[in-house]
Length: 467
Image (cartoon, rainbow, N blue to C red; front, side, top):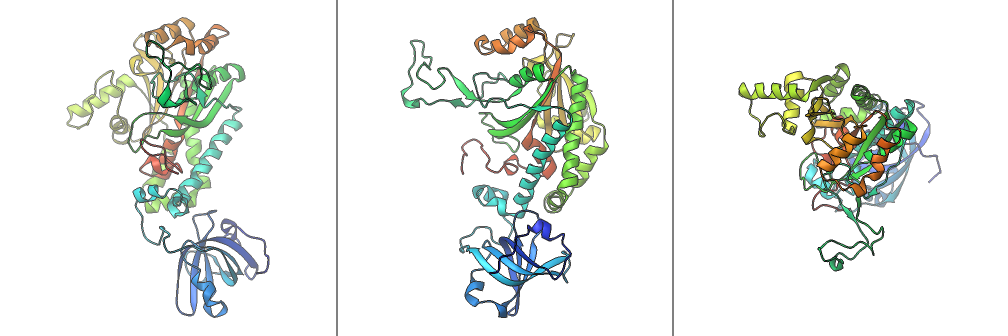
């Protein structure tokens, strides 16, 4: 086969220099045709769109043609011609075909619809489907958008540790990191594990958040963001929870709760706009195949200013809904940690646009949130989105040393783990704020997928660590 420089299909489909000789490489999605001519749909992952390769069977060896099956990998040299069929502007008249990799008949991705559950069982192959090709290209684009947003605004990307000795949320649902033989743990007379022989010489875990270390960085660099994997050992088998997920956590010195809300709204709108501007083909495919209202919902978020609603007002609205006959699965009262159904009612039914809920009861929020003067609430903020519920959680942080220390003591958080965090309140404390965005929650919204397991390549959930 003559050597011609390969063109990615995403670039080839834009070309109009008909008559040129081109080379494409990719995987066969479908092959159809008559006894004289076959049409091969070839895809190389660079775009949702296939290129059509027209094969005049008389010009090719029969043994070679037998090897061209769904899933096989080809290199094709041919002439770029104007397409006579609808749907694409150009196609390739094949002159030479090389089979780079055959695909046997056990290949599970034949041309038919597959359930999401089935595709999770073959997560090593599902990126080859149209759906997951689209999702993972969007995932890449969202990561680029996040870095660009913060870089353009003078934030610094800060790498916080994945192995940590502190529990940011105080929830205790952490994966342990150890080199010890778990069947032969040494314990003292009280039954506590002795970590002297362990790698770090103390109990360590996978991080649930980079926030605490991010706060340290913000009090030095001014404005930082983290973007990395985080881990929660919650036994949550829901469409919205993963044990391993990615988080974006900006932390900004001198920002109060209002600045924080402004940043969150600007940030998430930027990401949604980026998806519409840079991934339109993929978003449109997902809109047409899975979620007919996806593009409309994305555009809707951009048009509206987010509602800013105190928690207490939100509870009143929900209580009125119950009084008027609306049925919730979970109860509504002041002090409750809102369920997804409550959040979605406020967004989808009552306001019909995103809501930032503020001033939560301190009892249901983390120890580091700034306390309001009423002694009951804290300067928390959750951004609530249609179809998702909470997509961002954040707060103004407690800058007062004594208030923070008192809260840590009230919650019995071990001081031996928190001394370094308290130091920032002793040495030039400043007002500061930040939030966390679960990357996969953002992707659920932007792709319209129904399950969070379908927006990360290899989901980690209870009893599932395959691939």
